[in-house]
Length: 499
Image (cartoon, one colour):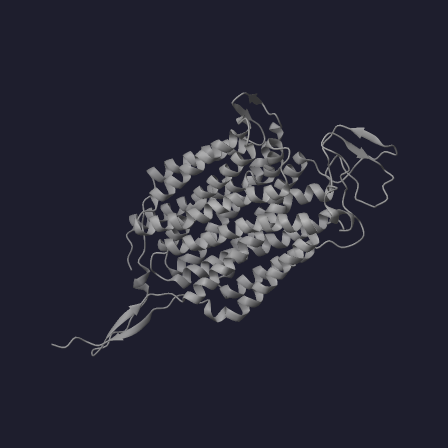
C-alpha cells in the first residue's frame, strides 16, 4: 500500500512522541521510588513496611482503575490526544500534591497514599500509548517499535532513580524549608515530574497528529465465484487471556524487586535512609542501562529467533536472578538494637553479624557500650528472622540484579509484542487497557505480597516464593506455546444471494 511521504513523516513523528510520553510516564513513576520509604518515615514516624506496601500498591491500583477507562475512551471516542492530555494533567496535580505533603498538619501518610494513587491513575495512559503505536504500525514494524517503547520505558526507569540520586545533595531540610513550601531531596522529584508533564501536554497539543494504518489490507482472502467468504476478526481468546496472565507475572516479579530494594539494603547492610536512597538509585540506574542494551539486542534477535523462545529465555534468566538472591551461609545481617532516640552499639555481640557502617560497606567499631542519638540502622529487632537468616552479600545482590536486568526487558517486550499480534488488526485500545490493568494489578498485589512475606519470614521465603512463581510460569508457557501465534484471518462461508 502506497503511503504519501508527508503522511508517513507525520505518522512517525507521532509515534516518536509516544516514545517520549512513555519515557516521561516511567520517569514520574521511578523518580520517587528510592526515596519513598525514607519520605514515608519522615512524614509519619510510626509508618511500617506494611503501609509502605500499600503506598507502592496505590500507584498500581490507580492505574488498574484508569487503564480500561482510558482505553475505552480512546477506542470509542476515536481519539488519542485528549485521553493523554487529561491523564497527564491528573499526573501533574498528583505530583504537586506529593510535593506539598510536608505542609499538611496531620494525616500526611494518607495524603501520600492518595497522591501516589492519583499518579497511578494518570499513568493509565500507557494503554493508550501502546494501542496507538500498535494501530500506527504494520506487522513488520511492530516488533521493533514495541522494542523501542520498552527502550524508552527502560530509559525512564533509569533516569528516574538517576535524577533522584542527583537530587540527594539537596539534603533535608533542603535549600527551601518554609511554612507552606518545602524543597528538598524528597519533594524535588515531584516538582520535576510536574514540569515534565506540562512539557508533554504542550507537545501533544502542538505536534501530535493521529494516524493509523489499516492492517486488514495485509490479509488476503480468496474469493469464490459461487460463495462469498466473510473474514472473522475475532482473536484466539485463550491466547489473549494467557498472554495477559504472562504479562501479569512479568510485572509482578519486577515489582517485588523494586519494592523490596530500599528496605532490604537498610536491613542487610545497616545503611541509613539517605545511603539507601542513593545506592538503590545507583543500582536501579545500572539495571536500567543494562535493560536498554538488552532491548536493543532484542530488536535484532527477534528477526532470527522465535519470539516465544525469546520470552521463555527472559523468564528463565529472571528465575536465575531470584535464585541468586536466596541467602546462604552463616553470616548474619547487621542487627539494629536501638530505639527511635538512641542506638546501643556493643562489639561483644554474641552473634556474628555483618558490621554496621559509616559508608556503604565499612565501619568503625568500639569495644565499649555507647549511646548515641542516631537513627537505628540494620535489621530491626522486631524481625525474628534477623537472628537466623543469613545476610545477602552485596556482590550476591548485584549478581541477581544483573540477571533480572537481562531477563525482565526480554520477557516484557516479547509478552506485549506477542499479545499485540494475537489481537490482530482491529482497534486495540480496550484490550491494551486490560493488559495494562493486569500489569497494574501485579504492581498492586506485588508490594503487598512482598512486604507481608518479607516482614514475617524474611528474604529467604520471599525469594523462594518468587522462584516458584517463575518456574510455574515457564512450565505454563511451554505447554501453551503453540497457541501464542500472530492473528490470522479465519473465514466462514456465506451462501450467495440468488435472484
